[in-house]
Length: 528
Ligand code: HEM
Ligand SMILES: *[C@@H]1O[C@H](CO)[C@@H](O)[C@H](O)[C@H]1NC(C)=O
Ligand SMILES: *[C@@H]1O[C@H](CO)[C@@H](O)[C@H](O)[C@H]1NC(C)=O
View 1 (cartoon, helix red, strand yellow):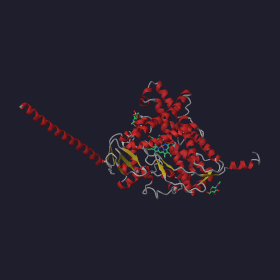
View 2: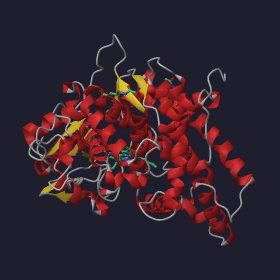
View 3: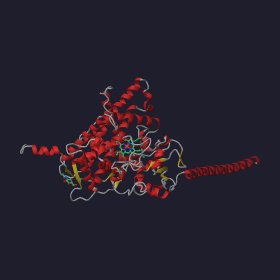
View 4: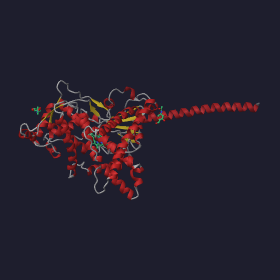
């Protein structure tokens, strides 16, 4: 009895103690966690706290880059906020962005569900050694095929681009006077430039294969958009709709992969190491070399060779196509809004180039009005308004604040380009802001359309070549205006991965070349 009583007592005591111990233990845990959060928050840059889990997601209205810009008005140029469970740090001071992105620690990428699907392949969504090696390799490869300001190879790239420019102009001429949406025509032409450099693939306008290819890309972008919410609130992925999005993405990726794999197989069959045709051949060469040296399994950090080539082609295409196409559409749209600028570009070209030929890269130095207009389009449209998201590779300090390793760091390029302390009346389209007192084009150091630092755009030189050759040739060949009876299209863009203008049509009036005038006068009447 006593023994029993004692054991009950002990049990009760133990139970009480253990509940107490447990309670104390839990309390300590909670306090430690709260202190951690507080400590982290204390050392984080200022910003709105928002609700737990949802973060500031509920207060999100409209475009994310505008939301972030509004926060900078309130909290300054370095802010932190939470979207869902993700910690976002936004930098909007160009010096801060430049100084941070120069450092190795800021070259990481966040791990998200999207990067999980990609499986660590490619270049854009990789980090560490694979990223570094691939970036250097691509940089050298693109240079080899003419992405360079200097040297004989530049002419090679110029020829590739001009082939597409000429075909582009041909398609437009064939439209005669009917109003036209330039978007689908540009899509083929710009895709051809990048696909030619990447894998010697060209599509004809109205090509079925191309239409499918573009559909896959567009679908990919849209699906990526609907995945975005889940990037910020991870538990959303357990909702039913999400599964099918994820599956569609995987399916989309697989079909894209198949298309690219066919091209890779094709290249393998016809590969000749003494004559490298394109970037894909330089990859095959690298793989062959590594295999011969017995280091093939170390290449790409041990990742599957074919899948890496597929993802590189996909990465370069998605980085190098939409961006150029949107920029050119913005350029045309700003010409509709500023016909006097278009006129002065045309006059400049008529004077410097004449009416016997299309513009060439070497003319650029003598066309300040044309060049400054392209720069102004890049500034005011900031087509990549938030650059790309970086992630510190370890806990780092920035301006006295502490950024944990998992943070998503956003360079708010849009805010830099719209900063009234840097630019006079930033909302105004004014190309002459890029022209100095001597009449020469000058780019201020806070002009960052291609980002800055170790992960800045890999395709800047190619982009500049394409923008100049397409834009100047278009204006040299046509007067562009709003179709009769239609209103001036809006300058409000659609924000996705890039900002694109809403669809619009233009009316094109040919500005005949001298040879075309000659041809019409020489041709005997009734010859056709
Ligand atoms: C008007 C055209 C373009 C603009 C405005 C643009 C802008 C940018 C920006 C802002 C970044 C991110 C920089 C950062 O977050 O640090 C970027 C990255 C990148 N761009 Fe471009 N880009 C353009 C065209 C191109 C072209 C034509 C190519 C390919 C040939 C290309 C390839 C890339 C790649 C591969 C990256 C990722 C680099 C990395 O992750 O290390 N871009 N671009
Ligand atoms: C989600 O997809 C996986 C396969 O990817 C499947 O096994 C699972 O049953 C799906 N869940 C729902 C809720 O549809
Ligand atoms: C193009 O527009 C300018 C005015 O901006 C005009 O003087 C010129 O005649 C037009 N050319 C053609 C071919 O319509």
